[in-house]
Amino acid sequence: MSAEPGELHLIPVTLGDVDPRLVLPASALQAASGLDYFLAENAKSARQFLKNIEHLRPLRELQIECFDKDSSPERAGELLQPLLAGRSAGVLSEAGSPAVADPGALLVAAAHRLRIRVVPHVGPSAILLALMASGFNGQRFAFHGYLPVPKDDCRRAIAMRERESREQDQTQVFIETPYRNDQLLQAFCATCAASSRLCVASDLTLTGESVRSATIAEWATGKSEIGRRPSVFLLYAR
Image 1 (tube, rainbow, N blue to C red):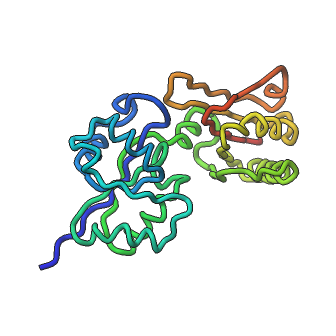
Image 2: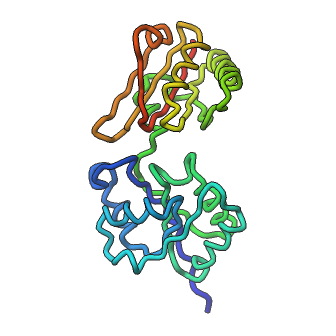
Image 3: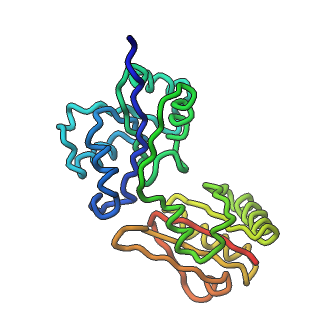
């Protein structure tokens, strides 16, 4: 008789250097501590997270396989084979909730194809936390990930999303590599209408957390710097 398939647990991790018990519910910590097989975006950060939650087993006894942005759907299927034999696994993002702006989505898609139960656990998502704190439209929003890097392409993309926001009454959500935060802020200020609103949410759930929602005119007045902190940008034009 063949074994029942295991489960694929989606385990949120912290958004930075903070005690996991402050931002993760006991149910998520308990689920992670009960697993010995992990599929991680970054093996090093995964090991640190498992150490921080005081996993019940020594780290050397845990199997951690890397699944990052360069991994394929075929690789996802390979990594899930132990689950078909009855073993359960946990998916760990480098930060926040797995499968949201994260390559773990391919693992989840493969699990559904293989009829493996997917179990999402509650935890921090910088995108949703920023939307909650922005004061913008939380009924209608779109997440676009990263904007183009070249200056002209970036500004064209911002202008397009600003039009969409105004026409559809929709909050537009973006993320950026921390070292480009201030360049992106400058691009918003140089491109958008003075009355459009921009929120920048940085270091969410961390000790340096800050959230500022203001008009483009207000952002452009004086010296505004974000620095190299993990940040979410939200644009809302009315």
